Amino acid sequence: MEKVSCAVFVENKLLREGDIVDVALYLKRLSDLPPYLVFDAASGKQVDLDLSGSESDIISRIQADFPSATAEEGAERKGPGRPKLGVVAREVTLLPRHWDWLNEQPG
Image 1 (cartoon, one colour):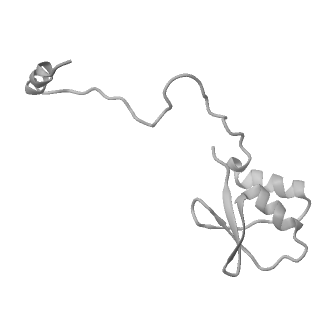
Image 2 (cartoon, helix red, strand yellow):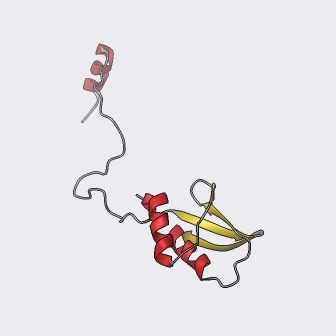
Image 3 (cartoon, one colour):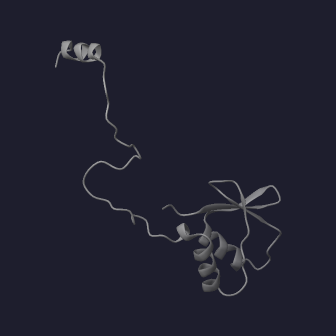
């Protein structure tokens, strides 16, 4: 799973972009917080962040709302072999003329 990336805009200017947890904590630490909008970088949808409470409260809310935001990278099985590409193997049936053509090919 990938981390959730987002971007924060104040008026028409990009204020900050990056991981949603880092952005939320950055906004929490601002003393003079101007009106801002947060957007999910992948989908472009607006994201509402609840910045009330402590930093640990904010992190736990983000973990609940965005499970992939704090998922450890490499959680999927990694080992030798080819990566899964989502391809499903199926049986291929050829016509006799195709088999003949294949038999004529060198190598």
